[in-house]
Length: 156
Length: 156
Length: 156
Length: 156
Image (cartoon, rainbow over all chains, first blue to last red; front, side, top):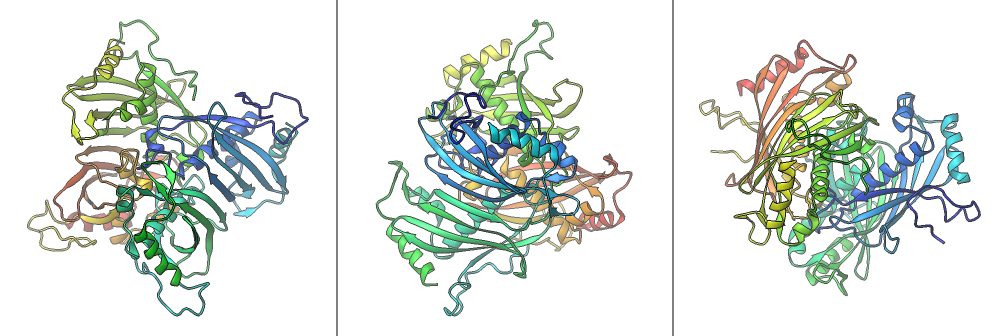
């Protein structure tokens, strides 16, 4: 039921749970690897962050602009499972999806897979929270413009 | 860099829960930070890895030697909570402790705190597994020399 | 990763000096930045490496395959000038070109520019050398397949 | 004649050329390495930056404080030669020295050596410039407190 197409959000909204992943393609470059010839376990966080920022851009949210306007979205929680390593030179697709928002917390799901979807490299979840940069405190509510955009993601 | 506290605590066994953490001191350098002026969330994984490698060294296990002998210890699972950010120039102590081993899986607990222990920045757990580098498969049992050394950690 | 804009070799061969750059587009993501809100000076090396690997791929050389066959191409020299910083969220084009080969040494030129080419962020040069991975020594000559491919680059 | 302690050498001034290097000890951790089992060429920049920040601290300049007060010291130029790779688990000493200041430009020399000084891994030079963070422009002169401190370094 996984749609292996490289695109956001094509199909129907019936099975929202499995559809609507944003896809961010990567290649394992030398600087991503460690002595084992495979991607170092912390490198995946850089890919996941890029995928998240580009997913936001795809729905009209420019992350740098959000920051300039005084709102940051730091990671407050993350959990990852490493199933198989990505090797030097391999291509992979970082898939991400906003699972849910709880007040000002956003839970993002992740799967990093081979382009043919036959191999699952990493799976995980990352939680962000909205923070007022000036006050250094969690915001009471997300900026309206972000909230509206996230609404689109959840509808798929 | 002052490295004032790097040693295994060998104190009493009464409060096993809070004692016996290996301590690895760090300072937040410019390359550890992001646009927010605080340590980027993935940087903590580099500190945690260094703390783990140095903890192993403190009990007589040279990680590079282990690798040269054909055994790797990749991360297979990790979960982190980010409580407060470490800011540029701040000192912190990365505390780690082998929580338990289950067969060839090792669970390490982490706390990253201010040197005076009054602030908790990050807490988490990392799971490693023994892998035979040549076969690319999980080992049946950890090398005897590693297993013996880990025994010391668990006794505290 | 499909790099849809990466094209070498646009125009005529008259102005060989300014044409024939391989172009690798990037976006400054949060993990690329430091406390200053701009790309950390060492991050550019990751972009430059990716550009070089993708330039090689564009002429039929798969870097991971080269490594698997026993030939590595470590950096032996580099020099960079930082003209202006790339800020969080900015797009840039990493341009690279094989300037010349001297025996088994390859000199690559770099320019990192704004997409409209109006701003120059970084310029530099990187020298690689062919190494026999097994012997840990510099090769006497580059593998024929690499040498042929590099010939194409120099012709432009 | 090299003093292998991590401190500024305050000994005689006779051989100014070889004395007075600030020494910053490092160990090559897994995340520093690449597929070759050696330190990735860009990682050295993180070590060099840490050595520079700690050298400044040793003469009473707190880099984070300097930044908080509105002065930044970005890298504007760097050149490196890679002589031999540092392998996973190896110890090394990053040696740095303020070579000279020209107005608001500071030239720092670097050598990364084995602890016994018998092997030279990397050598290079990094140039910094003082920048007014608010204006985003090069300062007319370095803050007095920094200038005084740097004077100590040059006297040795």
